[in-house]
Length: 212
Ligand code: E4P
Image (cartoon, rainbow, N blue to C red; front, top):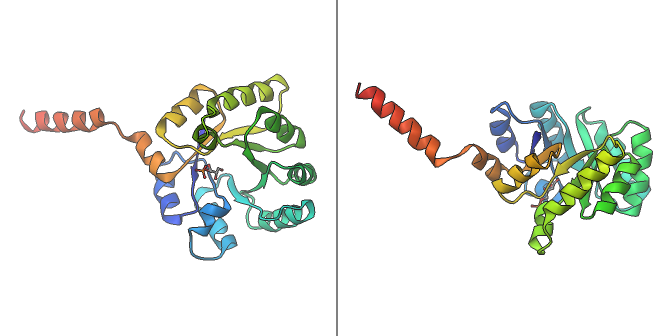
């Protein structure tokens, strides 16, 4: 499973990229709004650090506006992937962009039928938002299993991104469900490596070694 970082913060991206296990980055307008500086310059900097798929989202809600923004963003770097919301206009824009070889990450996906439509439109990536479903008492993991079945039943090429990750348990669930990618916020990414018994074990090994 590939692991992406869900942030637009350059320091966080540099730190995690340094671990050697970072495959890509996802941003969205809320994440970008937290950062200072020009949107396109930030995306370029992220692409230079990560050298894997980096999602930047369109703001327009109209097909032509989405396509224009997508073309503009995709000129920043070959690594840029265009995030487009799962709407009728989003599907229309995605079918045009996919035919032109511009990769789309269809975002704000909350149902198996939206997964099917996104895949049919040619989205390279499909992002179901698990945490937001969990938030309303609708177990997001069910969508992941249904969505993966749909992609596999028809050999769609789209990769599923387990998004809106709220805790390390979500990452475990994503890996067990065979999802292609999980996009993980910085704080949770750092929790993935931590286990108190690892720390206690290191402490004990060092103490024993020093007392030999
Ligand atoms: C993914 O692409 C989204 O940017 C993100 O996972 C949304 O997460 P949130 O529900 O915590 O805002």
